[in-house]
Amino acid sequence: MKKATDSTLMTSPEYRRFIEAMKARVLSARVSAARAVNRDLILLYWDIGRGIVEKQQVLGWGESVVEMVAADLQRAFPQITGFSPRNVWAMRRLYATYTAHEFLAQAVREIDHGEGGQILRQAVAKFGGDKKRRQAVAKLTESEVMEFLPQLVAETPWGHHRLLLDKITDPAALLYYLRATAQFGWSRNVLLNQIKAGAYERAVTDKKTHNFPSALPEHLAEQAEEMLKSSYNLEFLGIRREVKERELEDRLISRLQTFLLELGYGFCFVGRQHRLTLGQKEYFIDLLFYHRFLKALVAFELKVGSFAPEHAGKMDFYLNLLNDKERGESDQPSIGIILCAEKDDVEVEYALRSKANPIAVAAYHLQTKLPADLKGKLPTAKQLADVVRAALTVRSAS
Picture (cartoon, rainbow, N blue to C red):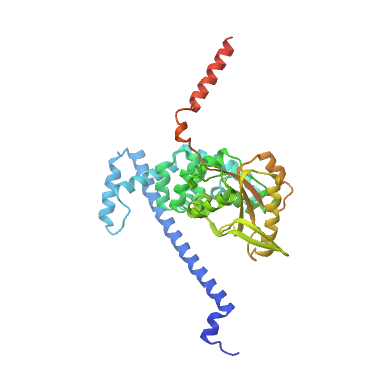
């Protein structure tokens, strides 16, 4: 066999594929090593926090022990950062918060509803296979959750825990952000943005409208559902008047980084007005993304008005073209998201029922706060409730 020269080897498709595979392997190894270091660090902090809490409960040690532990650890390990009094207090709070009855009870409730994620998978592995899932859930108690909790907590970096402990008090919200951070690899800035944007509140109160269960395999449908938001906060665009779809698109592109933060971790921007061809005709997708974890193209269509059934048909057509012409060999089916000013959930359900491709419909909000000239001029929710109660009292008395 003729030996390839350096120049021909470097430009050959086989070498390029080989080196790209090696780069991916190096990156994967670095990520795995970083995760292992993070897990060990969090488990160390967990053990320190647990030790302090248990000694305080059993031996009656006071709060001053936290400062003493911090000082002694700093003297023993001067080259190691992280043993400041503030950080050791956070270690104690980490353990105390995640082992509190309210948090454990919330974890058990979510597991009972099939939303426990890693905790449930580990519990099933302990009690039996998938066929014994119900028995596993039935046997799971707060003490059982405690066995698996440190591993779940260790999936999240320390800086994220500090942020969550400072900003979130509701156990359900805390568990939601913990799971989402572990699943999607949110950076601290992304996590902060999700908290400020009320991601948990929107996930709980707003219904997500899509056909993912019928259009995707079960495991992928669950991941796609997690990726999707029921509504998107576009207040950062600063729009206070009616705009056309192209202007909305222009503004999103001009604030692309902020828009990506709102979409959530994993979205990679491909292009705007992405061109597709069929025969002699051309078609254009408003915004096209690729989702790293779903390994799928995600097409966005922007609508400044209300959702209409024909929007679903158009998106279904675009997804057919994407799958046939641009979907990679290892990619999952392309997903479509129709982003509109408002939607009727029943209408969306009927429009998506016959569509074979995975499509979701979500509303966006351009303004979440009252304009300055209306502040103080409209009744608050409490004032409205008081009026209603007063009216009911008068009616019952008469």
